[in-house]
Structure formats: structure tokens, C-alpha cells
Length: 444
Image 1 (spheres, rainbow, N blue to C red):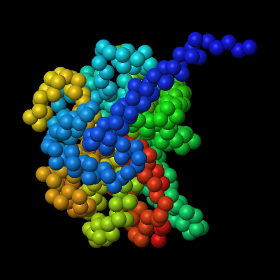
Image 2 (cartoon, rainbow, N blue to C red):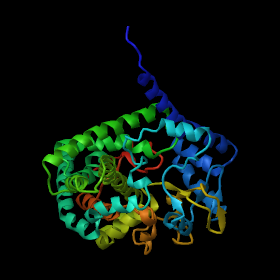
Image 3 (cartoon, rainbow, N blue to C red):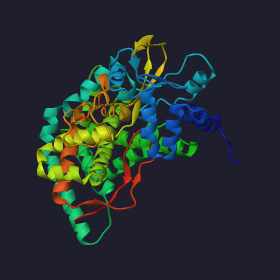
Image 4 (cartoon, helix red, strand yellow):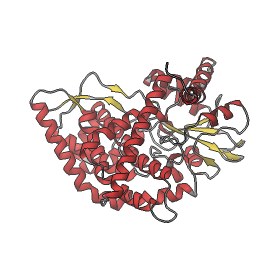
């Protein structure tokens, strides 16, 4: 008879506790708040149900209540100036705030698994603050400068050309085309894999890891969904450990090889810091761009007059990418906790207050954008959006995403000017990341 050890019981118990604290109880509380008319609860409920049509009206209700709306569990804002103030203020921090006292705080600390890498697990760049954040970011910034990205433009165009040739062959053979895996994902994954030294045979695996782990940003996962996410993150960690060990023995001229070299220097990165930084840069290097490309294709299909204008004025493509980011951002929202008592938009907030910044709502602020619900590729201030966040956590790969978006969308529509989105497309089930899971198209 097999003996069940204590560790065999503790691990599932901790996983159940993590789910209860991070997903089960918050989701239950938000659903109850929604039934009482709370706007934040209604937003979360509609996101969980995939109710796209309800999101914009709910965000406009938040706007009508003022620059900082007091909801049941946090403050919520769709005011662009207020969003920028919160995201840029040293009084606010990222990460998950859990009071030191209280039962939930003790359960959360007992259930932690610090060895698991993930976008919301320290020492990820997304959830650490200076001085650690400054040190990690400095290590990878040089790869994503505007100059470095422009040097990648020619290679990005070559990759796009190869992918478009393949699409043309498949279309000629009568194959159905789902643009997400065939182009929107393949382009940024190939680019970031080459930048980071990921071998070709591992790129599909990395894409699969990113897709499986994307819901880790969301609140309200089912226990089954959380287990799948954690399993994917564990598999990703195992692959990354092996890959970095390989680069230690066989370094190349790529960012991950340089990060490994930094780890081995005196006072360099710890193993946890190396894995968190390498994993985030790799996954973030393509996840939002997949959404940007898919959202752009869908928007241009829905606005043929704007696509026609881009054909007549191709110099507008770069601005069009920012208008896509403004109108349908790849990231819906983000949150910050007040590290100390502070004031925002004239409202005094106690330490520990959570502010949810609805990036998609701020991008439709009528005080900043004229006729904000209109998709206009020539909009003069399209670049004033906050799709890439703001402040010290401004997206590290913003320049890369903009370049890939411009190259990818322009070359796709130049090659297939009569491209049309076909029935059967579906949005990703994720709540924070906003994009298309499938996007079938008909090519000319």
C-alpha cells in the first residue's frame, strides 16, 4: 500500500489556498457587488462573460462619476490625466497588496510558491520597484531603444515577407487561413526569438508557453484554469533553466547570453532574478504585439474608408498603429496600490488603497481626444494614448511593438489589399490582455 507523505498533501492545499485568495473569494465578492450595481463588479462580471458590448457603456458610466470613481473594492479611473498621475507617482506601487495582519494575509503568505516564475511573481519587472526595478530594467533597455529597434526593421520586413509568401501559397491551394497563428503571432515571436537567441526548433514551444500563461494576469480564474496556468509556468521555467544553462556553455551575441554573463559577475543577478527577467522579456516581447496586429486587422476591416486612406497616404501607417493602440489597446487595465497616504484628483487616499486604471477608457477621454470613439488613422494626437502604461513601468518594448505593428500591418495590406475578415473569429478569453484568439480571413 502506497504511503501518502505530508508534502503530497501540503502542495495541493497550498494551491487551493492560492486559488481561494487570488481568484475564488475576489471573484465571489465582485459578483455580489455587481448585483448591487457596483460598476467595478459589473465590469469584471462582463469581462468574465465575454460581453464586449457592455464594456464601453460601463466605462462611460465610470467617467460620468468623475475623475476618480469609488467602487466597492478600489478606486477606478478612466480619466487620462488621472491615469498618468497614478502610473507616474512615486506614491503608488505595483504588485499585490496584502495587509500584514488578518487571516487572508497569513493564508496568502503560507500558500506562496516563490520559485514559480510569472509576470506577477517577484522579482518580475512588473511587480518590483526601485532600486531593484531600476537595476533589472537597465540590463535590458539597450536592446529595446529606438535606435536598436530601427536596426531590426530590415530583418522584420524579411520575416514578414517570408510569412506573406507562405500565406499566398496556402491561399492559392485553397487552405483556410487563421491569421493569428499564421502571421500575427509568427511575426513577433520570430523577431524576439532571434533577438534573444532562442533556437528555431523551440519557438513554437515558447509561443505555446506564452499563450497558456497569459491568463496569469487575470483575476477570477477557475481552479482548473489556475492549475493549467501554473503548470504552464512550471514547464516554462524548466525549459528556461535548460536554455540558460545551454547559453552559459555556448554563449551567443544575444540578450539572454548577456544576462547569463551578468549573473556570473560579482554582484550580478541571482538565479531567481535571471529567470524572472529573462522569462518576462521573452514573453512580453511578443504577447502584446500579437494582440496589436490582430486588433489592427479587425479595425481596418471594419473601417474600409480608413484602409483606403492608408493606401492613398502610406506615410500614415506609423500613426495608424498608435490609433489602433488607442482605440483597441492590447492591455485593458492595470492597477496600483498607494504605498503611503496620498492625494489623487483632489481625493485623499489612505495607504493601501487600490486604484484600477482603465487604460482602454482613458484612451477614449473626450477631454483629450476629439470624437474619441471614432477610429481615425490620421488623428493628430493618437500617440497620447496610455496603451503602453506610463511612468517607470512604461512598456519596455513599446518601440519594438510599434515597429512590428507598422511593418506587419503595412506589408500585409500591401500584399493583400482586398483582405477581408471571415466569419468565425473569436476574442481571447483573457480579461486583461485584449486580442483575437482566432481571426479567419479571406485573401485576395
